[in-house]
Image (cartoon, rainbow, N blue to C red; front, side, top):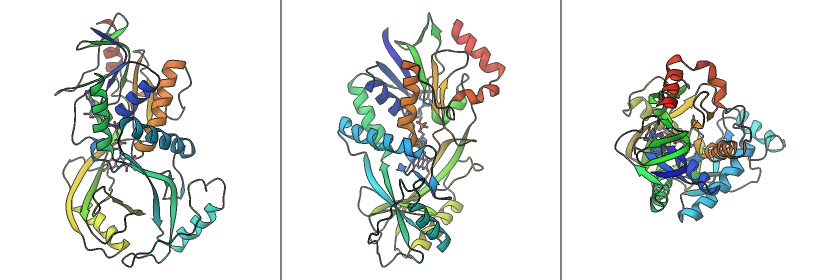
Length: 365
Ligand SMILES: Cc1cc2nc3c(=O)[nH]c(=O)nc-3n(C[C@H](O)[C@H](O)[C@H](O)COP(=O)(O)OP(=O)(O)OC[C@H]3O[C@@H](n4cnc5c(N)ncnc54)[C@H](O)[C@@H]3O)c2cc1C
C-alpha cells in the first residue's frame, strides 16, 4: 500500500488547485477523480473579475484574493508550460448616466479604486452602442478551466499522483488513523467534489445549492477581441472569431437541458450591446456549486478528524480557489486560522444524526 500525506477526492477546479498547492508545500498526495464532461469546471467561462457590477463594489475579499490568484495562475502557467490563464481587462459598458456617475465617483475613492480604471482609452467600434460610455476593470483575466484541468491531469499523471475511475469514490474509511482506499493510505483527506457533495454521507449536511448557468458560443467576425460586460459578458475564445456569451443564473430549473428562455435572454442582451452579425454554434449548460450566504466552504469535519472539504465556489471559483486552498492547507499544516466567513463550522448546527452515525462508522471500520 502506497502511503501519501493527502488523498484529494475530485479533480475539478478545486481539486486541481488543492493538489498544486500541496505540491508547493512539498506534501505527497494522490488525486482520485471520476471525470465528468458536464462538471461546473468543464463548462465554466473562467472569468476572473474582482468587481460586483450590480453595486460597483469589490466582490468578497477581492483586494486579497485577486492579487493572490493572479500570481498563482502566472506561476501555474509556467509550471504546466501552458497559457491556460490570460490576463485581460474587462470593458464595462454603462447602462445609464447613474452607472456612469457612480463609476466615475468610485474611481477617485481609495476604498473602491483598486480595480476601476480611470485612464481614458480609445475603445470604439462602429457596431457597438455606447450611449453612456464605458470603463475598464483592471487585474482581470480568463482561465480556460477545461484546458487547465487537462494540463493538471497530464502533469499529475506523469508524477503518478492521479487516478481516474469510472465510478465515484465513496467516503473513505479510516483504519488505524489512516484513510485507506484502492492501494493508497493517507492521514488526511480533502473532498473537492463540487455538487457531488450531496452524495457524500459525511458532508451532505452542508447547504450546497445548484445554480444553473447557460452559455452560447457564437461565431462573429465583427466583435472586438475584448472581454465586454453589460448584463452579460462577451468573451473572445482562442479561435479568433468565436466568442462565449453568458451566463444565465437559475436556482429553479434543475434540468440539464439548454432552454429557449435562456437563449432568448442572452441574445436580447447581446443585441442591446450592438449590431453584430453572428452564427450560434452551440448552447451549453452547467451547474455552479453555490451557497445561500454566498461564501465558500472550507474546513474539517466536526467528528471525523483530518477529513476536510473545499466547496461552494459559486460563480467566482477562479478568483477564490487558490487563496482558499492555501488557507485550508496552511490550517492543516501550521494550524493557522481558517477565514471565519468561509469556515464550515458555521453550518455545524445543520449536521444530522445520519452524518454523525456515518462518521462514527468510518472511524470504527
Ligand atoms: C455556466 C457557468 C459559467 C461559469 N463561469 C464562471 C466564471 O466565469 N468564473 C468563475 O470563477 N466561475 C465560473 N463558474 C463557476 C465554476 O465553474 C465553479 O465555481 C467551479 O468550477 C467549481 O469547481 P469544483 O472543483 O468545486 O467542482 P466541479 O467542477 O464539479 O468538479 C468536481 C470534480 O470532482 C469529481 N468528483 C466529485 N465527487 C467525486 C467522487 N466522490 N469521486 C470521484 N470524483 C468525484 C467530479 O466528477 C468533477 O470532476 C461557472 C459555472 C457555470 C456552470
